[in-house]
Length: 584
Image 1 (cartoon, rainbow, N blue to C red):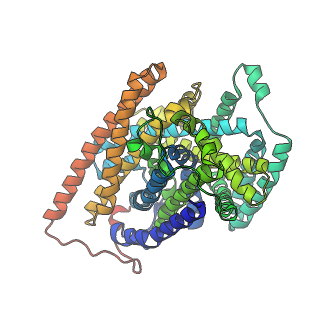
Image 2: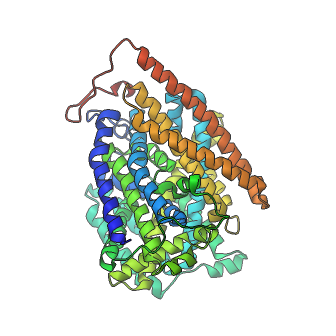
Image 3: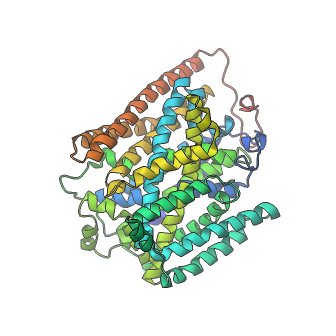
């Protein structure tokens, strides 16, 4: 199958989804109100609540959610064949991720930019807040741990990528200062920074940076040193105001995302690469079943609960107008789907020239998991080579892309984890942790650091499975909050309920499968760490599903029994009073 045919077809579907389906959601399901005063204005503080241009908010949201997961997940999932993986990326992006990301942002904006966990207590029940916050804590811990391992592995494998990655930080801070003080657009400064970063790629190849001397002096491994340094950076970055580093780095990375997508997509067109992987792969008999594990392996490539945390944790605090939610929420989800498409193409058409070569990279599930990131990097380098870029430079460029996205997600992830730690501390009335930003950030950093330092193929061989199930489960639970809210507003919840039921069923099933495997395994980490963690997430999830079901039924009964007719849906052309009662 020519890769260009698949590429054009999928991009056309994404464009149609944004043009028509997101417009339907905006008008008929979420009823966006251009007159609604967003929390960014109501609670403006210059640190977290900052009214921001929708293009910059889009950059922050897109880059924060488009970390390494939409690259790694599809790169692993093509093990079962590119057909099932691509089908779920397309359907999941248009009909599940778009609804989830868009809806989580709208509901948060309508409730003072509160986190999705806190919203659960207001929309579903008081008990559900604690349950949801615990699940989110587990998810963020897994996200930050896995991404730290991804970055460290790429630094070790591609030392030429260290210099351009590190130089981005001070340059982004400079852009933030310039934009904040001059009140100017970010496009030109961010493009200048990106050119400087790319100019550092050949320098990085000439003078590669490693931490081998530190590892030898401390008796550890280079991966361990990098992981510690990465979390030290995340600790500091998550404490800075969003305008200082997070927003400008997001905008620089958005330009990098555009360049990366252009290189991949143009490389496919110029090279006319052929997909050499099978549509449906004849996997070994002892392989994990693709149903339901495909849906949790692809993870962020289709729909991700982490997106609802970003939408309600940081993005909702920056949204200038409620009508910007469609552009930021739904379009960012299609951008993530496009990145997943590029990952599939890189790992099925760019990384190998023949089916025999591809089969050697995907001999079994363990090999596919361990080599996922490397396959993507090599595949992108192949596409770049079609455009005349040397393979060595293309490999560093691809590694830089993955590292930048993963690091930005960690910036946001640790910041969100701090919010969650403080909310849980408030619930249990542990004031020293609830009010101390340093202590809360330390907890948000140390817990995933401990997980990421476990030796062996822990991150991709075992932790990724639990991350995938917890991540997709969080998406299902966020959809439950959205569904109850939409029902209470007397609007049609079908667009939310269909992906909700599908996700909860698949993820609950996957949690059971993983629990059985972890409990039966001989590895003590599986039996005494992952199995109890999996069980705890499963119990919390079942409890919250029951709470959501009761709330949804109650909202539906009240809607039917109401003597008053439903309020007329506001159009996108005229301001409506919808939602002003939720604003103080």
